[in-house]
Each structure stands twice: as structure tokens, then as C-alpha cells.
Length: 425
Image (cartoon, rainbow, N blue to C red; front, side):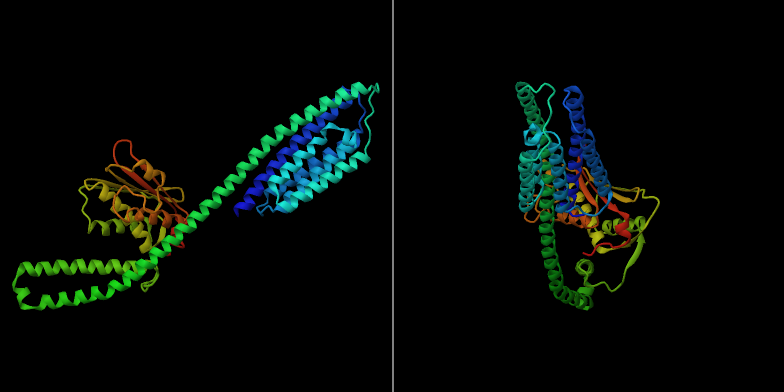
């Protein structure tokens, strides 16, 4: 649901709450004035208006149960009905001379906060017309003793009550409405930030794909040269040189695999088709491949994911895990840990290390580009890519420093996303 409609839904619920207060206040006021003060009021029509407000509130609550969005027009109609009900009650109880005419200000202030400019002025015009009509047409109150001084004293007291009620309700509800609006603005700002980050990722992806294409030719040339060297007698006779050439060829093959992986992740070389696997097999394979070229002194791996679930294997998801493993190894070459578990319908992967941990400012801005404890150009992009890749799947990444030593980064991914869409690079 769009954030604007969600905000309108919250504000409409606030109007419902305000209307319940109005219903209670009107009932109490009618009872006190009619029986407590002995001022005769037309109880049946006033009770009918209260009943209509109750029906309106029940109808609005049923509307809120519907998942359709709430438009500004609905808020405008609700406020118009509130103003109409207030006008009718004032007509039956003294008209413009009733001190509770001040409640018009509350309705207009709510309109100015919730509605657009045109709708707000329309509400002002409607309330103003009602006020003018009450000056000419109303049912005067009949005081028991007809004492003008008593009437003036009651009017002053009623004006104070109306003032206190209006100001308290304004502070209460305008504060809550502003909080809803601030939440909406914060959400919109977060969406703009995410859009900027995704644009940054697209640019980096294009650069990586272009670099992979450019590297293909020189790597192929080096492979041919090494193949020629291996067949040359001068190298075949020297066992040390022959071993060096074999090692160079192995590292060159690894570079070619990395380049191919970049192209696969960007969607340019998916010739082998979709690979289906399970969570346990996928993580086991990723760990095995990563450990083939990295050598942590101690690697504690605990895969307790159960029951197992089918997912789609993808090179980009593997690269996400590689980035986390590499960061942990760089921070703590002596020890790192990996745990894989299941929480209901989510995959939880925790990567731990025994390094110095994250600095407070890095934790505060975790996942933003170029935020890293490493003092070198370009650092911090790995975690930035991890956070955004996981967010694309509807998951989340959290980081914390351990109580003793080191840090932990935890991925939480919905299995539904892994088993269907997968990553698109």
C-alpha cells in the first residue's frame, strides 16, 4: 500500500477517535444541561444526531477494515459530515450564541492539517456558511428564571469549557497527525535513499560487466602463452619453472572463473540454465568452494538448517556470502564462524569473527557505501552490495559487536524469495 494512503488511513482512524469523544461529550453535555441545569433541550432530534454520528463511526471502521487505499476525498467528506452534525446540534441549542460554536475552529484546523489547500478552503466556506446561518436561524434556549446575569455567567463558563476542550483536542490530535506525517516523510526519504543506492549499484554493475568483457581478451592471451611455455623444452627440463607455470595456469583459470561469474551474475551468460538445489547443499557447496582458495586458521561451520528446503542456486547469492566470508577472514585470520539455521519460513546465516569489531560510526551507518573500518579507497562497498542484494529479496542484514571480541553479521532471508525469483544480479 502506498505510504500516502497508509497515512490517510491512520488519520482517518484519528478522526474516528475524535468523533467518539464528540459523541461522549455531547451526551454528557445534553444530560447536564437538560437535567442538571433545568434548561429544556429538544432531546429527540439531538439524540438522533448523536445516533447518526455513531452510525458514521461504525461505517468508517468497517471501511478501514477494507484494504483499499484511503483518498483525501474521503477525509474531506468525513470532516464535512462532522461540521454538518456540529451545525445541527448548535441550531438546536441556541445557535451562534452557544459557546461551543468555537468547535468550528477544531474542525477547520484538522482540515488544514489533513487536506489539500482547495479542500481546506471549501471546508472553511462550509463552516462559515453554517456559522452565518446559525446567527439568523436557531432554536433559542429557554432559561428557567430568565435572568440575564445568569445567562451571561453560564455563557462565560461554557466559553471556557469550549476553549479548554478545543485547545486540548487540538494539541492531542494535531500532534498525532503530525507524527503520522513525519513517518510518511521519513519513509519517502528512505525510498529516495534506496533509489539512489540502487542507481549506484547499477552503475557499479555496468562497470563490473564492462571490466569483465575487457579482461576476457588479455586472460585468453595469457592462457595461450602459458600453454606454449609448458610445451617448450627449456621449461619442461626445469621442474621449478614447470611448477610455477602450473601454478600460474591455476591462478589464471581462477581469474577466468571470476570473470565468468561476473557475467553470469549480470545475466549475460546463463547458458547452463537454472540450477535447483537445497539450502543445506547450497551453503555447503559455497563454503567448500570458498575454503578451496582461502585458509582461515580455524573455521567453525555449523549448518543446522532443518527441515531442508528447495531453492534456486544463483551466482549472485554465492557472491553475497563470499563477501561476508572475506570480510570476516580479513578481520580475523585466526578464527571465524558460520552458523546456518531456520526460523519458521526464513533462512538465517550468521558470520562471526574474532577481530576488533565495528566502530560505532560504522554500525550506525551500516550498509551505506564507503563506510568501513578499513582506511583504503573504495572500502565499504562489499557490505553495501550485500545489504542491497538481500533487501531486494525482502530480507535484512544486521551487524553487531560481540560481548567479548569480534563482530557478527546476520542475514535473514525469506525462503519464498529464494525458492522462486532468486537474484537477478
